[in-house]
Length: 361
Image 1 (spheres, one colour):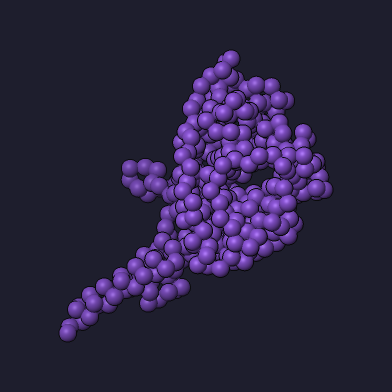
Image 2: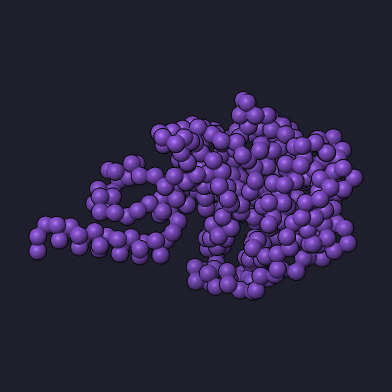
């Protein structure tokens, strides 16, 4: 057998091995940066650290809510449980409910993201939100002969052209905690016809990635691997109600045929996915207090720009506003209020309503 034939067989063997690697482990993240200094936005420094992750439902802000809504009727969902951990599902949306306090869960979940190759750019224990930095899923890289032979010597020369970050939100619910995971992605594309420059731009959120990390988080919290996989298949998903945009009394709104509890959860996940920063929430009033940077900003393809994407830049001041969810019979209406609580009828409100509706479709 000549040298070329041997090389060809080696390449085929490497390709087959690569297939088995992708089937057994499709996630292998590596952070794109070094450990960042965890920054608290100036407008969050005054938030109280008392009653953290308080029960949503009382007629005050999230940092002072009481348990008056703990016994509110829950929305119809499919669920399965092992021990004190269960997964609930409404349409394509999944979340965990754990019969432990948020304080008991914070450190294990923080360790979970570190163990999966991420650093944390946001670590806000007082409002129950942590967010990873941008990281690359190295499992998507081709396992060719050169990379398989030289390994780390050439690993830095390979890139998937995609970056991901994940936000985890903890909300107290009754005697336990609801855990939501949301994904945001970026992809590198050429910015001109000569293909000598690139930019990073947002790509669509991936619910399958969110679900996989929830499953892995279950394992971290004590659920055996095989049982965690079985729980994903438990229960038929309810039909997802689509969102429609309309104008009511001059104000742009989104309507979904969901009761308040399900609408509240869906809106919260959408806000996490689409570039909003939830500073506070008042479930009794159906209000999320948010900061927002439009997700269609394009950033130059440099590492420094990538790592700062999603945080307010010097040339783009975030909007401070409120997103309100109101029950209307068996449906729910979502609208935008300005920072004083008055209805927002500006072009920004129209764009924000469309962003929310698009993510719910």
